[in-house]
Each structure stands twice: as C-alpha cells, then as structure tokens.
Figure 1 (cartoon, rainbow, N blue to C red):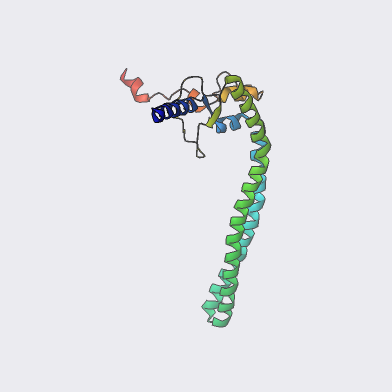
Figure 2 (cartoon, one colour):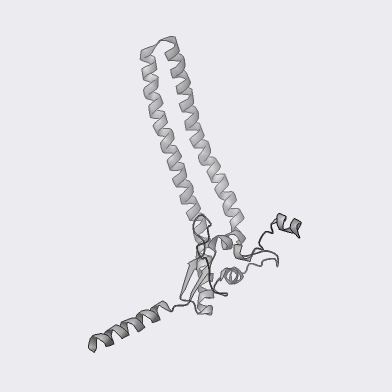
Length: 193
C-alpha cells in the first residue's frame, strides 16, 4: 500500500513538472529586424577584410617562394632548392595558422559585437515570457536556420511579441517569422485551373 502511494505521488509530481508552459521564438528572425544588425554586419565585413588581407599576404609570400623553388629546381641547383623548400614549408605552416587565427578572431569579434544585442533580446524575451506566463522559451530554429519546432499550439510563438517589446515596428506586410510568410503557390496549379 505504501509503495503504491509513493508511486502515485511520483506520477502526479512528474506529470505536474511536465505541464510547464513553453513558448518559442525565432532568434534569427529577431536579429534580422534589429536596427543594429546592419551596422554589426558592416563592421564584421570591414574586420574580415583586414583579416583576409593579412592571410592573403602570407599566401603571396608562400607563392613567391614556391615559384623561386620551381625555377631553382629547373636550373638544377638542388642545394638552393632544398633551402627554398624548407622556407616554403615554414611559410605554408604560417599561412595555415594565420587562416585559423583569422577565423578565430572573426568569431570573437562577432561575439563581442553581438553580445549587447543578444542581452537586449534576452531581456525583452524574459519580459514577454513573464507577461505570458511562460516558464521556458526555446529557440525555434537551429544554427543553420532549420526549424526545430515542427508544430506548436497557436500563441506559443512569441517572436513578434519580442520584436514589439524591443520597440521595433514591423510593416504590416513584413513577416516576423518564416511561419508568417505566405506559402509560394505552385505555378503549375494555376495553369491547371
């Protein structure tokens, strides 16, 4: 009897814990309408251009040494060719490291520029969630932009509410989320009618 009562209490407690009110929002859609988004993208483009120039300079140095190596080898100067080969291998290693470092620096810069925007979004999301009585808000898309939420009850997508909480006015025709976009009609269907 005692074990049955414990089991019933466990089932009730588990059921109650799963009865949380959950919402979802499309962070990418929110970011795309943020006024700061254009400036961040432009700053990142400029920063990436500088990094790319640094990497391209390393590549140009490597190409010069490779050309010198080929010419020296063609003349039959094996000792000089071996020296150039060693130098080329060092430059190649430096070039590879520069590329990896440039990627890392660009990601750090992106994170640095995005942090204040994400903090604003998180605060707006928290306000909307508390107003709606939501205990949890999930991102409705993954990092590649693929929808993670396959179905949800109407009213649980708070993307538009978060955008409005941020004080961003959308045009009536401008969708806040991909789910608000009208489906594309198949042109072949129109011809058959």
